[in-house]
Image 1 (cartoon, rainbow, N blue to C red):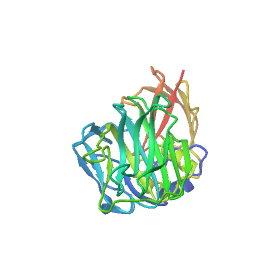
Image 2: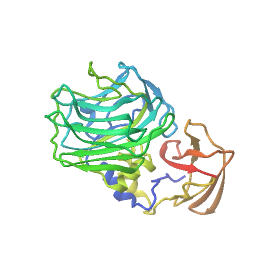
Image 3: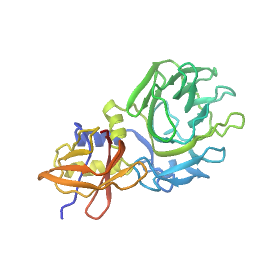
Length: 336
């Protein structure tokens, strides 16, 4: 049986995208049963877990994310390192919302101030002006003023996963939710990091202003460059595991050069999969429950998949190799 080499992309050249997702990668945390860094920077950027529990991740697999309890002792701590505290930084992560208080911290590291002390931070926040919850990206400088802040137009709701990404340097900040740009702002605020302070996921760890996150965190990445729109879309729609950023560069060399496509998306329960020679497929819902389906071969490399007894919602197509090893997952939406 031939080895299956699959990259689930839509209208993107496989070799180019794979290489780009390696370029500038400083840290990559799949959060699969540990907080280890799987980028080439290695153990120096391993994180530490504090009172968190392993949970179902955004692709529906058990033990591929961590659940934070919403108290100040439950968080993930990442090291004090230039790869996470640089002057040009792109962050990507998945967050599942269990609670929406007026404010809670998702990502945080400190500056030298005693107020407005976020060197950078990502929070969920109740935007009173818009009368809705929002993701808020903040940066402040040595003068202890916020400049700038960006609130998302997409309002987070309890019980949903969100892919949130941002880019910050000393000239601009940009915020993305589910692959969509929420806002950008030019500025001239220089980074102001406090020495010896680590980076936190889920808390600030500051005694006077520690607003913990209740929910799940999955697949966290840091880059030292801005990502393209296509790369951000790839992180959101293809949901690659951290391991994929290594495998894809090798796999792309042996892939036949065709783009694999999954369409339509959204679908009415039927999807077409192109450009595969053999397949080991599984479809699951957001809770990881397997969905029954019928498969019809249209050609040597094209299949029609008909999902059975499904309601409207988000599902994942999982691709496995001949030895049962997981290769990829592709998110798709059923809307009848």
